[in-house]
Image 1 (cartoon, rainbow, N blue to C red):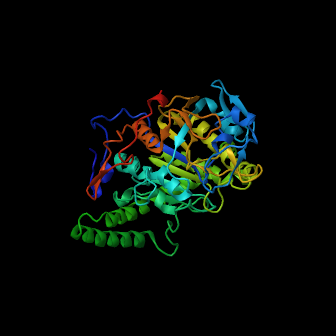
Image 2 (cartoon, helix red, strand yellow):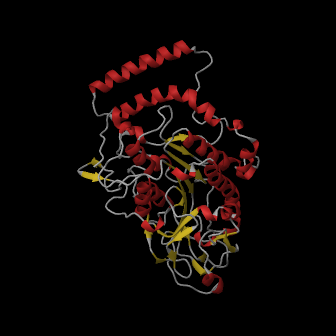
Image 3 (cartoon, helix red, strand yellow):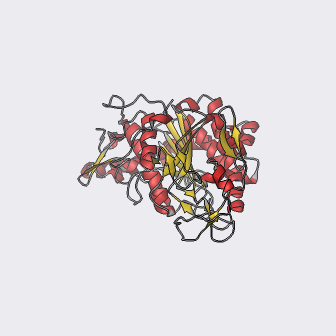
Length: 440
């Protein structure tokens, strides 16, 4: 069992050599999280039967209890690339990447409510208080760059997802493994720069005094991981003053790279910055980067206007996401980076209410896309039923996704544990299986 404890030495933890641990195919993870629920039947899960039965009555329960008739996608699907994976016209740039994508088309979540569904996709549980996947990975593998956080979160200008920072929390793990949020515009970390009136010598003297006081307190209160994390944060802040400004200066990128990510367009500039910054962070040894597209102020939550909502959201998401995949591949980073295109749930195959306007929340079956290390490219695993309501074959749980991601990182999900309140906890609870059919 991997249980590094809560002391200053947790960063040295490693699963290398653990019984049952896999050979690591991935060294790092980038998660692109579409907040609000991207519709699977309008993006990656083509349903000819839904087209044939468009407008017909279909009895199914929905979150708001307003099930209308079956609603065929307003976007055309076509087979893409050599693999022939069907991707809709809503995502033309990701469609161009079809031969690098691995689709999981039979994912099931436990909640139809945004906040607990986002919590489950992040932590494995619909209740708050549990560590996020990024925190578990940081706890298990540590960092490759002591001057930067191992787990960075890039939020959306439209606000954090429902629930906010609980989704990148350390939970009961040592406080130092929680995600560090970077702002999407301006200085990534507020108040990082030393005020102009303070000299370098004064700054160093102040930090040294503060460090002595904190360590004196820590010695008198062993096991207080919150204080230890604060001490580490001060040490890291000093290092980040040197590292972060250079990483965040996207103007140093060639013009063709900035244009590829969409930094020259209003619709794509924000998420393009997040995706490009994610690439720059993993290049410098950050272990886990999570970039949110959408937030509580504006999201993929398409209740009343599916076409308007998804068209607008896809314009901001599609080009940067595709650019990230292609950029990682061109730099040789995709070979040992796991990219996860996730969302909290899908959307119903029926319209919400009378007429063809929106779609309701749908956790019973949806699609996530993956790319990169150790996966079968240009490949689809699992399938939904004829209209995309329920898994038709090879149902996949969120625990299965987490177990597979940890496996690609060389971690046995049953052995990455932490003893808390009488229970040896893990990301996958008491569930989860590695999806062998996804592995190359």
